[in-house]
Image (tube, rainbow, N blue to C red; front, side, top):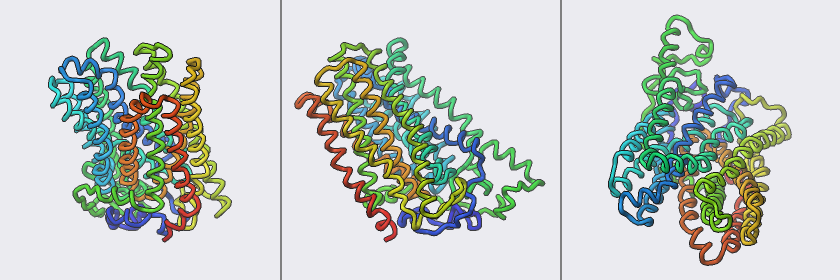
Length: 502
């Protein structure tokens, strides 16, 4: 296996890895999982979380500028909205290719390609003055940034065991969670005072400022390339810091590498094939993975249906201006932040509890054999209640908004909805990585594909539904859909382990 230092890192074919759930292969129970220290893990995952924030941030910082862009380019609002649809389509499709590349070539090459495309796309967007160019370049921008979302979860899976995955995956998702709340606020300020081009200049400058340190210091974590981190990387998998440290080790053998018996010169080169999205698409039709992906996509789409309705509903009921509407997204961001922190601790606690019950004490930095471990039940014991609570909260929110409650009450329910939906989404994302920890980028690309397409659909239909049926009926339908897919997770809870072993 690629994550066993005693075997060549490219011995396992990455495409074939997705054919069989990696949990089926027994692992040595006491084998070290990662050489990175706790502080190094936190810094690595925080970096991945910040990188992943560029995709949702770019999507949401754009919204306050829509009217100004339409006016300057002499196009209709419908045509400008098409650039949003294009962005979300690419946001779903691009990670299918980038995830495959990241699992073959490594995380650093994938990050380099993503940021080069993204930076060039933003500079071009700031300089263009035509609608066709805007439409095409928004797609380019999306292709560059969207791969980083799947990469964040992949990096977390590279260095973190299942015992700690709840907390660290929550950290990895923070950028993706907070960006939709913070983006509209900053976008409104930039567009109003500096013009809509300033939005793209800001994104380009921020990306360069982030990319340079990443290029210099971020280590390769892909287990197919560096195993538990003790196998030396080379080429573009090697950071400048790695190169400097490698020179110092020419005559002094580091004790971490002594265990691997593999030197940089002896490490075979990984054979890189053209990125294959079929590996990602196949996961949609596997059990139990496909059911988890569908349920997670519905949860994400429900969140977007609530946040997409906030501007029109809050403006009509509370007469809020653009700045007030932007600030009304803060409770959503705070709910997600609190959820990612609290729920991650709860998920890890439940894993430790189940591990002690099934197989005794487990060290957080050891590889864990999940072949006969009920990982599906362990995760969904937290995820299912959160999903059902979220559905109830959305339904009550719809009823309350029809009654025009005080603004603090409405914002309080936005906080609760955000908390519960984020908790359910993160738990199912952790489960997906647990099932495919040897190819996590490919697995999370499948998750990203489903959530983006369902999220785009929810965003497109929520306003027509509210106009036709009213806010109460609309959000009761959303709550009903969430409740309707919960039996799928019940099936995974009871039969997931049987399907996986089969």
